[in-house]
Image (cartoon, rainbow over all chains, first blue to last red; front, side, top):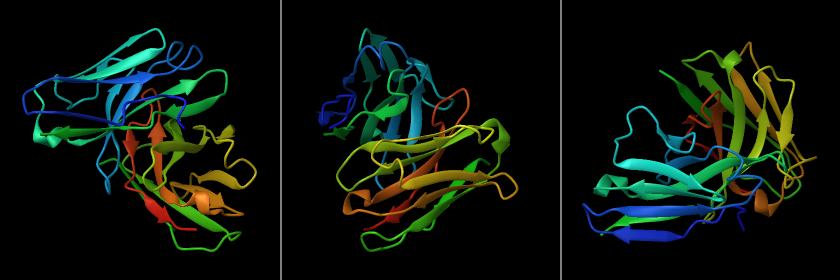
Length: 110
Length: 115
């Protein structure tokens, strides 16, 4: 069981907007930057959002990141079939001195 | 072009050892901390181990501490993970990744270990 909690799946039709939550604690999400990674099985995971809200170069502005207290959120607007993947949040835990990832959220475009 | 390529994955028996390699190219490896992250079948990502840019600091997940050893060879631009006393729950795809100011900004495709 991951320390960072994500919903297992989210689905929506093309063009719609989805949000993916990542719930953690005071020693990880609340204290540190959060990143989001996109992963399609069999390929290398890809960084999408870093420093909680910054988009990696080449990532469209349909992707957004935010944080409030011990929770972070990834938003994807104008959903496209190419967005289908599993998305993971990640951060450092200052107390445990470890890197943490969420359990992953599978995004399905209907 | 920045590229990380893992190799060394195999099918092994419980208790055996294995060494994974990650070949690094297209960037100055001296500037980056390096990581191993694994994904067990049907599970999420799990940080395994990390080594600082200068090789002095090494950290391990509790699940592998004392059994796995991370190292880097600057002359060969290669990251290693020595896996010992392997258990069935070590079965996973093992990815290497780099971090400087931006965490885990580039990953490799992974190499599969089956115990």
